[in-house]
Image (tube, rainbow, N blue to C red):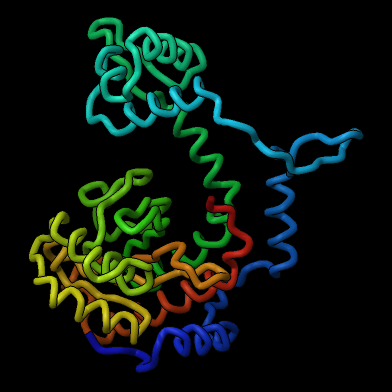
Length: 317
């Protein structure tokens, strides 16, 4: 991999921040920050109060939320169990996996079914999450501001370079959650699924996680041993890629993660310089020669910088 800019992390972002206005495509000029912030804040205030109601109408103050409600905690466990299962589960299985009494799990399942969050199959007497969950998740994603800020950038890269572009949220040191993708470079469902965590460190995004995240080398090695690649490098080779990514500000994987697929990943940092999102472009390796890869990497860095600058507008809790 050849670095576009041979300097460190701090200089990389300073230089990119200074050049935002010079390299953004005309076809995708965003609204001003003030206008965008106002629209995003308006979206939030339509549905969410800023705190609990105080002494007078319209006045809100933050208060201690108190201790967790046991029934809500138990219901959350049930939803997580159903989400993590590859097949529908009966009440006894849900109770066992969630660590609940069967009667408690049954009552929660029936309540969630009545509220539309869980579906029930009479023939097999089993439960699964309903598509109503997807409706709620899409609403959260839409109101987060990510669709307004990231999608135009992703479409511009996809159209200009013939690749698919993905945006993922960093869930922690060991997983990424795919939030959205655009493009038709290849069938995405063969590799990743929106809304499902993917293990890391693997591929170009895994290199970025290792380079810009907070995991130590022993922690990375333990995680690295658990993930599968098409052609998995040694850990020493992986760490060499991590070192290169720190210097260049991006990572490239040419078919090591998925056969015949080239991946380019870049970090999106929060205002406090924490790794928040990862942008990844994916295309067929035979379509991305050295020149095309160089142009794609530059475009990805530009998009990531613009998202980093707008990170304060996003609501990605």
